[in-house]
Length: 249
Image 1 (cartoon, rainbow, N blue to C red):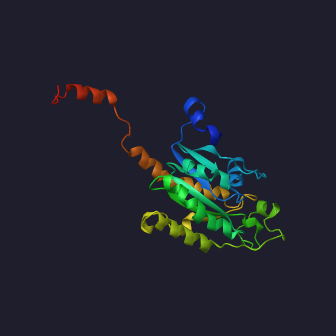
Image 2: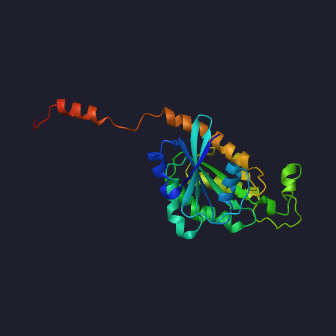
Image 3: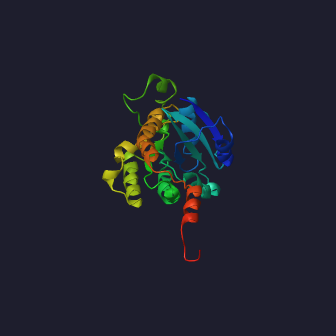
């Protein structure tokens, strides 16, 4: 799978002017408060390594080839001063990944209070996922689920903090989002399947998160490809207009 990276400040330019950049078939956007680990999740998925990152300014994106399709994954800023840009980056998005820190209840509250309204510019049939990151910091060990690599990376370290958000809280938020969007639960993926817990530091569930999202948006891409073109043939319109008889001709 090929991956390309762009800067949100000039993201439109590479798509329009560079033959090396491929036009995305669909857009996936990450939203969440500062320091919840959005950028680190993307780094772990794309580059397979964890690195300490600075806060994102504006937005940046990766272009991921998934089968025959190109998916742009947008990483957005969580700081208040960049909040207004979020709705621009969400415009036309097929999927939104809302990220919180499992050790910080306020970061979950912010998703509903501050970030959900930004998704009003997303596609009407946008798919949502709720992701609790930083499970490696909690005092709970996911018995039997951690890999040897995760153990070596310190997933089972004795230095833990108490989690403030459980998965049921995320499921409840997902159901409120469905109501906010005025959707029927039967028409959207089930909450249990769209609420994830991850560790950007160890890689726990990171691949599973993104690949599950890509598989979920595939029907959206296929449906989009079947829709009639939104373009108008102006030449045909002018020809028909010229041949029509009007009251003032």
